[in-house]
Image (cartoon, rainbow, N blue to C red; front, side, top):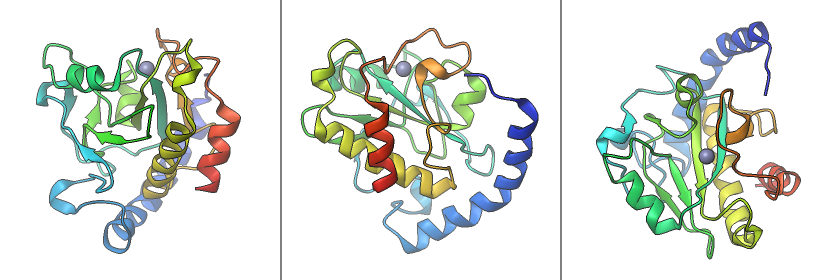
Length: 200
Ligand SMILES: [Zn+2]
């Protein structure tokens, strides 16, 4: 996906000022985060931390703005994906993994930290990565439960960082510049997903 550089940079400047109060507000008023010491852990997600060598400790959104949610499909089972993120040899992680059968959500990396999911450092620093259990050519894994739980999560993330709930900011891994991955693939129902995010 091609984006003009200047409008993005300009918008980012504007948003840095706007995003911080939204986060602080969410932390004090809503169910958004478990607490300051835990820096961006969502209490409704199961905490299954990735190995410390599989992500970069940061202080977002102060250090980097959060502009995108990146949608992935695991090409692995839910359990194997968590195992991969816990294996320091793999050098990969995502903030969240959503289970196909019931929409159960695991959080593996704090949102303040930079997960290694997009294959692009700039996009990693500016995004939250959500993995969905399944395979790009097996849409039966994209259950109602998975879509619904993921959409609620994405909506909450967007609200926390003042990210618009639009397709321009909720992108597929394949749309990250330089991406070699094709997920979530053509069978991911984007219209339905964005509709659910906007309704959540
Ligand atoms: Zn991916």
